[in-house]
Length: 403
Image (cartoon, rainbow, N blue to C red):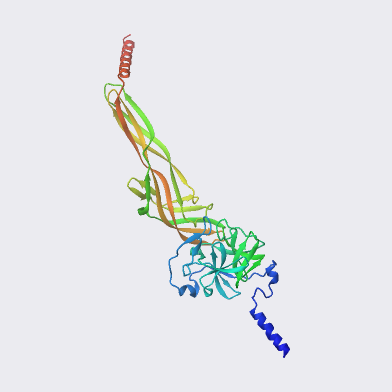
């Protein structure tokens, strides 16, 4: 009878113990636990949870990196956004979503309320408001990579810019990796547990090329600034004759046009990128889109094109006058918003596509003109001196002709 009672008490004690308290002392002290493959889920739709909730507009979001990534931290708004990043947690048989409160990574699961559960200073906290990790259009290839003792692979997903805190997990669930404290922290039933071995969420950066196409400019929302006219060439004609003189002028100038496509966080810098679409041309009356062309460039860098403009002018200079001819250039700056599709090809030949928004910035010369600034009478002494020299020249020619 006593043996039976002892067995019952032992079973009750085991059933009430945490999975982390049962046979996992070595794991928590830094040995390598067995890492199960918790499946990463970013697909749409988001199971039955999303279907039961009304879709609402996302309030705010922030990008994971400074550029080249479609990962965003989206503020929780009582419903799961599309393309939320999650795992299927085999240990507890549920879907866990990657979240963060401030810069503390953790998990959200619908059955435990609208909170981000994270570990900090030996305890587990329920953070609110919080943010959910979103991989818009499933554009990024996400991978869990093994690491340990505070190390993280290249291109690991940070919780905040400049903070050495990363999204991690082990076989028990989601948490955070601190490279400063060199461990992975797991929130579990009110307590904080740490491990020396873990997996870190990373993005695949083995990108071969990027293509931007189907570019649509919103010219109605263009912002155009006109600079004051600039004198780029100036010449003078002096007519010492007693009759009008006609001169034909051809003025040329070489200038540079600056073009820049910018603003889309999804476009990765340093990767061969081409854009196929029209090029906005700035006119005095607005913006005109050229025929479609393909340009290779570096995203966020300025493309400089050298152009030569030539203007012609027939000028009639009055007798005993000098005239000033100026070549004027009218320069414009334009910001034109656009939308486009971005296609990214990886080294494994996978092709992912997403919609991007951005701004086309350009400084162009809209017009070049040749104008007669003024015609003024010549100085009388100079005119008379020129006339005397002309007369002497005629007499000299006559002398040589006669003798």
